[in-house]
Image (cartoon, rainbow, N blue to C red; front, side, top):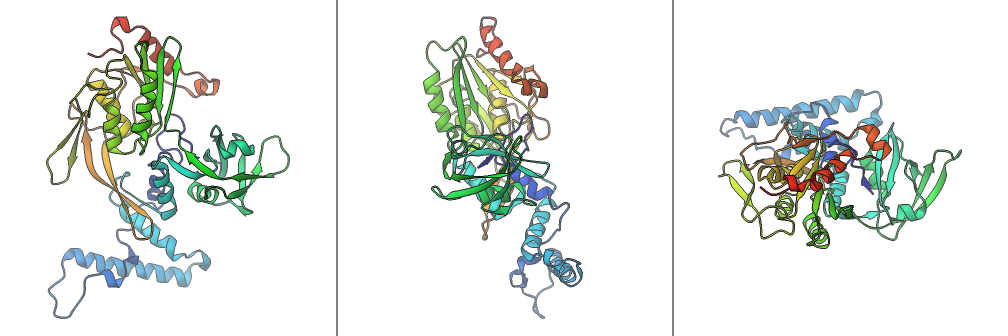
Length: 420
């Protein structure tokens, strides 16, 4: 099962793959500056004749003792002793330690969520195949994926899942609920469903299967205008985009709409490969600025399939990170027109470390700059043509942003959408 992306918002529920990490940082508030679970055995030895401790070592020793003291008091005095869970406190301290940096993109992710994130970034997982959300504390099916086990079993958009294999989902986080529903291909999961218009909950059995995430969606629109949507920059993004462009781009193609709306980003190397489909050879895509090293330039690799076709790129507030790398490079090189709303504004690169218990630590290790040298943290990219997609448009099935993109491509004789 994979979460829903939402509209014009980067951090909805677990998409992307990046959003869930923030949940675990924010959830622990200001947090602690140290982690008591490092254990005394991991601290520097304190011998009577040892040199004086550095101030840094002293802070760690005192901090470890402080957290141990807090834990002991809680175990002795807290009114609900069964709620004093060492593992949860360990993860809380770890998340708080990372949150103390004040960087929302540097985050600690618990093992269950880390596994789900890793599966999604590989482009496939084993489960029932549905986008999901949490509404008013209830786990809801947003949309069964076409042809998925969820759709075949009869699950519908709006269904509330109350229990999995007889165990209630009440009080569980989105990630915990997803973890219970996912499982090995061929296994059966029993879901207790509450459906609007049906008086009593009923059970549906779903046989899990391998689910391929819809990374690329594409089709031809009226007037020989090609449309491609990229949902995230995961491990298969470049390969699937190239296959779509190979099928769509012909001598008769009048223009291309590249949809990056609600795309939260992903792997940096995928951003470079994707941008290389649209920009001329050796064009600068971005510059990476890392700690204690010279800046590193990333330029177009090879010859792309869509270098010459008139191009419009759709963006919104959910377009972030790798999406902004690609959209920003296209805009600055005059390769295409950006339509929609100002992007999210994330100009940093994270390195993911898998820790000993399966949890992960995402660390900001670099900042990237657009070809003009601008970093987008907090600002975002302003589109060339601003068009707002309202909730009313969405509910009615209207898409004025796509309509505007197609109209601009029809006006290509006036210079819109053409390389400059």
